[in-house]
Amino acid sequence: MSTKKSSVYEPLTESGAIALTKRLQLFEENSNLLCNEIGDGNLNLVFKVKDSKTEESIIIKQALPYAKVVGESWPLTLDRARIETHALLKQAEFVPQYVPKVFYSDEKLAITIMEDLSRLQISRAALIEGKDLPLISKHIGEFLAKTLFYTSDYSVNQHYKKALVKQFINPDLCKITEDLVFTDPFFDHDTNDYEPELEQDVERIWQDQALKLEVAKLKQKFLTKAEALVHGDLHTGSIFADGKETKVIDPEFAYFGPIGFDVGQVFGNFLLNAISRDVENQEVLFKHIETTWNVFVEEFSRAWKNDGLEIFTKVDGYLEHVLSEIFEEAVGFAGCEIIRRTIGLAHVADLDLIQPYEKRISTKQLALTIGSELIKNQKAIKDPTQFKDYVKQTVNL
Image (cartoon, rainbow, N blue to C red; front, side, top):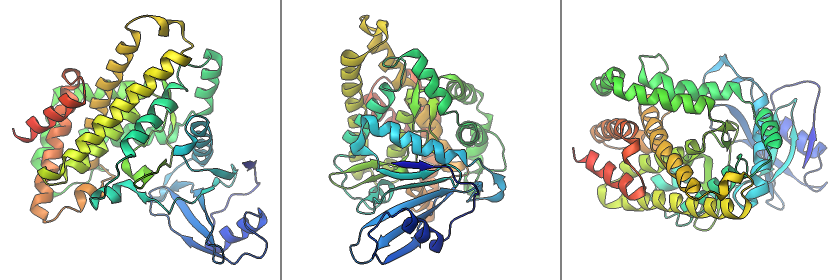
């Protein structure tokens, strides 16, 4: 992969993306290149450049100096493109099979050129369609275990770890998470977005002091617990998959934070899809949560025993303590994710596409109840079986 620092930033166009591709000689000289802007995300421009002769293609992603979903009134640093590129490269050191290849980056233009994954499908869409993704949770469990363990104090020299923390300082995007996940949904804030029929349920959350106390504790951990290089936005919309392959994308929110945060976001998004389904079709999602955690524990434990550098990794019981703490925090973070995806700024199609409208409202009411109960009772839920049982009990309240 090559990296360049250009002198002047300007947003790409489709013709500009083709010109850049030709200048970098990423295709054969006589290629007939076509380009389409395909980005439908909240923050960036995304282009697909394809050689119509060979069908070979690449993706060009460029950060904008503002949030695309809002406009120039919400400025953002272009440094997030550097964060994303370096996060992908760091993750590829441990799990190259689960991240796209990076071919080129330009920090000044805030551009990353990477492998085209259009042979796969965004897993959120696939799950909404009811498709079978039999290996996604196994792959994500391994992705989580290895990327998180091998960037933690358990496995790396303290000086190197602190240098990594510095490299991935990401204040702008962390502030988005701090606000949209941990703060705004729990107060009367103008970024919140919910149907009028949810007003009483939302007011109940805002008035629940026990709930807000636990959210405050989780937010403090997100702010201060620099355990490992977390993806920072690991929902099912950031995972490409099919029946055999899984790729994790978009780590522009990456920073050093609590290990349980990534795990909890995965739990929360699988659960959001589960509750959007009829009861008889939910079990596969609870199985995905269980498999994610079991594979995470297996791979994390293997890495701990084989590659643990911290001397206390040899102390009996310490691994079990760490895993217990990760799971507890993951349950709480999952609850925050469920609530914010229901009444916060950034919704998910799992809930918003439910028909008829009355069912959508009742499912969202259920989501708010489940999210609240997970947050307040995170210490009582010790494993995926209890997690599933607690959700089902909450559903039947």
